Structures are given as C-alpha cells and as structure tokens.
Amino acid sequence: MKFRKNTENKKESEDLLKKASRCNPKGLKELLKQIEAEIVVCKGKNHDLLIAKTIITSRLASMRDSGKIPL
Image 1 (cartoon, rainbow, N blue to C red):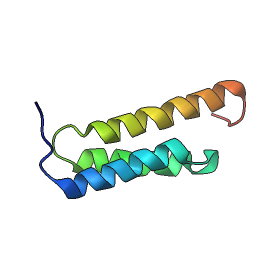
Image 2 (image 1 turned 90 degrees about the vertical axis):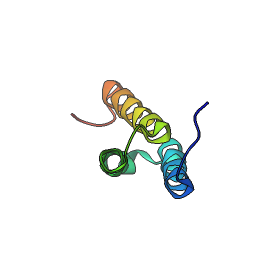
Image 3 (image 1 turned 180 degrees about the vertical axis):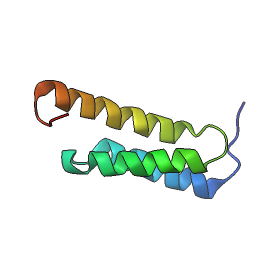
Image 4 (image 1 turned 60 degrees about the vertical axis):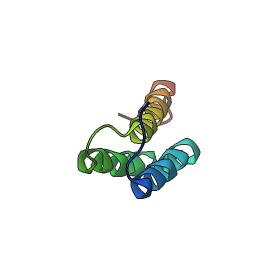
C-alpha cells in the first residue's frame, strides 16, 4: 500500500487535476506547460499530475483531429 508523504503537494496536484478536467480549450496549452513544470519539480511519480497531463494531451489531440485548433 502506498501512502502520500506530503499533503501540500497532494493538494496542489489535485487542484491541477481538477483544472485539467474543467479547463476551457483556450487555456489547455498553458495549463499543460504548468503541469509539465510541476512534474519536473516533484520527486517520484505523482499520479494526479500524470493523469492531468493525459487528460490535456488527449483533449488537445481530439481538438486537433476535429480541426478546432491548428497544429
């Protein structure tokens, strides 16, 4: 069983995860940059940040495929 060591980082990563699921299309790229920066800074694997990154990249790919945003 894994336990999280730092509750402050957990709170921040959960907030970013919520933002990723609710973010409007215009803010996705900026939020992705912020999440990638947090992933680099955090030590170990933060599953909330990885899930948030997956959500954003899949939304961006879907929007690109549908022609809503350019490459």
